[in-house]
Amino acid sequence: MIHWREYRQILIAIAFAGIFFTLGRFGLDSTAGNRSVAAFAFPAVVPLSGWQLLESGPVAKSIPSRSDSFEALLASRKYHYRQKNQQLVIETHYVAGTLGDLKNYLQDYGSIKLGDAQLLQNLRQEEGVGFYSLFTYQGRSHLSACINPRGGSTVTSAQFFANRRTYDLRLQRLVPWLLGQESLRDRRCLWQHLSIPLSHGSAEATYPILEQTWLASYQWWSRRFPPH
Image 1 (cartoon, rainbow, N blue to C red):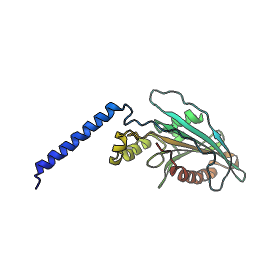
Image 2 (cartoon, helix red, strand yellow):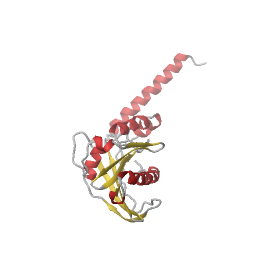
Image 3 (cartoon, helix red, strand yellow):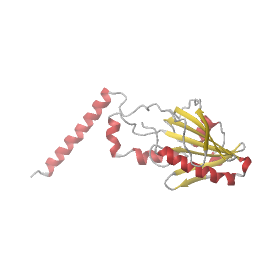
Image 4 (spheres, rainbow, N blue to C red):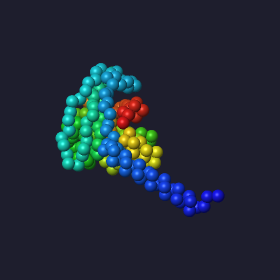
């Protein structure tokens, strides 16, 4: 019969073995625990229930460097849809190292300069999906949200990093991290931005159209989030 002290010695030996393995891994491979993100190309066709795809194409944009971010734009694409007389534009940007902040995203990628009060006054949450924001700007109704690699969609940095703490820092992800297969904190995001003109109605009339379309788009993309 093994005494409890022998159990303790076994556990200590396992712990030390893990420590030496980790140190060895980091000593031999400088990229361990900091997995580079694989290249990704958006599909030319993304089906959207009730809408006809007219055209799509890449969006060539670079972001200004900021001291508070190591964000990198990996891929982007703009999709144009039509439903009867209604025109819909969806821009999707695949970014890594993001802070998950809507205001920064819109300034960098959408050239929309609005304060937090305006951007978040119609912040909404859908069960099973997450957060998204609705607002109007220059004659169009807009909906923006960040599709996360794990957890629901987010709009603010606080929401984004809450997902990282909840879904990234889990025991089952420790080994892939140590082997350099994944980053410990997965700061990737599929930023989605939907917009339609206000010419066919007020914001209150167009918001439900954006919300319904966003829910369908979210379900499609959340099942196809790019592999690390």
